[in-house]
Image 1 (cartoon, rainbow, N blue to C red):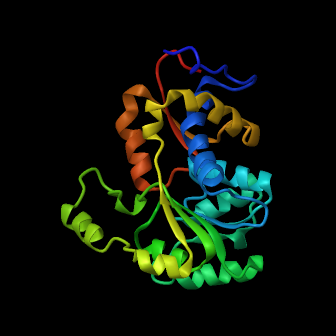
Image 2: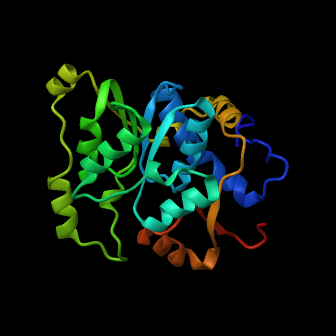
Length: 248
């Protein structure tokens, strides 16, 4: 391993917390700071606000002073955000695809914002267009996942997936010009070919996100299928960790 890659585990962190931190925290930092140029004047919609990336996004946006609205898939996740992190329940939307636009309008009215300036999106699907349509001029829709495609069972329904693919969101580039909005898609995989960027990126990330990640569930290595089912159910919060024998 190149000498510039290893980073010491912060004092007081477990190995599980250290392992859970880099990918999710860097995803939040890269999307919101490097690409999104987030600042105190922004109104940000964070999808999957109770997930591993979403919790880092919450902390980052709190640090920069942005106005934030979250979405979650289940009511108990709204309770989790309120009870564990003090997020005001009225700022957390339990997504309903049949009325998501109205839910966004109500949340914007509560925070006193006329429009969104950033959407941080790992869900896509039917929730993409209502959020995109509520972007202000110069707004950024930052897309890093499409959880709407995730199969809730061990065996995916290929007919269901084909239907989702055919009805996936489509944006007219000419309309984007007229509306002065942008869609930015990213993942971090390509950075492994530019490892020299990872060490300074992690340093900047930890300056904004110095706290260890929230681990919502731990599984033994021989229980990997159960860990995957936990993710498929959509009921997990924070990071799901698989621990090898001897880990702490």
